[in-house]
Amino acid sequence: MQDKIQHNYFYQQPVAEVWAFLTESELIAQWLMPNDFKAAVGHEFQFHTRPMPNFGFDGTIYCKVLEIVPMQKLVYSWKGGPEPGVINLDTVVTWELQEKGNGTALSLLHSGFSANQAMIFGIMTEGWLKNITKIADLLNAPAS
Amino acid sequence: MTTAQLDIFQTLADPSRREMLHLLSKESLTINALAENFDMSRPAVSKHVKILHQAGFITIRDIGRERYCLLSQDGFTRLQEWISYFDKFWSNKLKKLETVLNNKANA
Image (cartoon, rainbow over all chains, first blue to last red; front, side, top):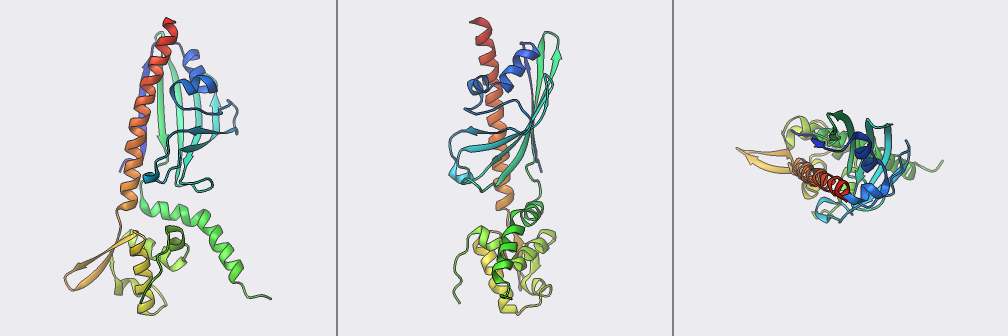
């Protein structure tokens, strides 16, 4: 089963120009979505798009810059869910740029869609469910 | 016996039900075979199965004389929908970037 999305695209503009459109908030907004992106590792930002209740998605994409190699590579997390604080989509977007002739070869990898349902349960169990259980255990613990 | 409808979080909050899903992710089992893995009464197992079923995590199918629990495809389906949604999304956005870049060059 497919668990990632990959696109390769060629632009006639030089790398620096394409890079600017990936890393400057106002330029990103022109083609992607309104955002508060900053090109700094660790910076947390959001994209806003239309909500899709059928997907359990409220229209906000929560991101964090994970890696920047100027003019070459940009990686950020890409998370979403039905309401603030609840994440059911936990993925990563990786952009890579390469000079090609006078233009730019841009590759996009959107990964982290869990391929295996058992794995989803595993992740849930390991992650926030553990915390819920912990709280439940504390609540149920006999008063000593 | 009535069972209050639980949401997916409440459904998964119970360790026995999570363990049942783990077992069913490996193979489909009859309720009896499932029950053998747990130190609880058969009615208690049935109640958990019912809750998992109501929350859409499993389907129950009668095969021959046996009643089997199968992990539901809903999770997979939803994942596929997400992937195909974002696949189109990116395809459109990358085209839009091309338009924006070209317009800028002509401006």
